[in-house]
Picture 1 (cartoon, rainbow, N blue to C red):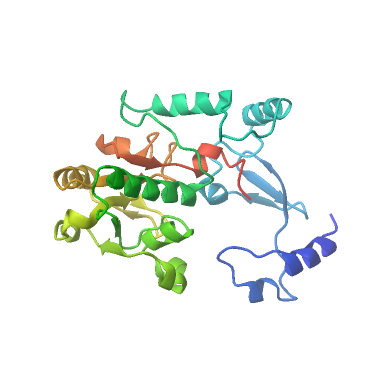
Picture 2 (picture 1 turned 135 degrees about the vertical axis):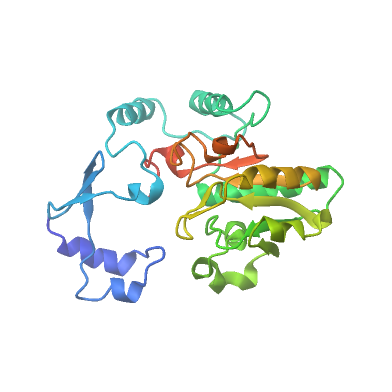
Length: 273
């Protein structure tokens, strides 16, 4: 493949996330142009082979070009690519929601709200938590507790909850107020009257450098939330669908949240740029 026209267009028109674009667009930098994948292997436009070691940012849990997923997508495309969820429904959405609910005890996490990605899943959970307390006649409960070194996404609410400065500090002026805690002891000192929910990455903080929580942390956090009338949000965008050794990380401590945020592995890596 002749890369020259592609690289020229790339450097003129594409803006990459978390990338120093001045260095990326330097004349002596040649971006890797990936063109094909099979299983855990990717190939670039020069035929060079790479192991997809981070599963395309933790999304591709079944491998590239998986025949069963390819066949399912092709079958759906022969029917319709997309229909609105406003005022109508469709069989694949219903069946997936039913299967997800079936992963948990009956009557617990019974409904699925479909959004776009991990960051917007967190946004939805935040808005639902705020609305819940409004409907319960407690509108003052509108603040959130998040942990130091947390990462929950890059849209405004999700970034407000994040605790990794490199991802959030530049936009601190538009973040909403969040109570930041280093650990459970720090949470215990908070006054819960104005708090809507606590959000946590179960078992491990991914973007912080794979920082593992101590055993029993989720059980203790669930107990504190219940005792102080707070909702609990688990961000399993990274850990969901087998990455922790079980289908969901919260299963390791048999703890259920009020909201479970999923993405990445749910897509199999097929719906991300």
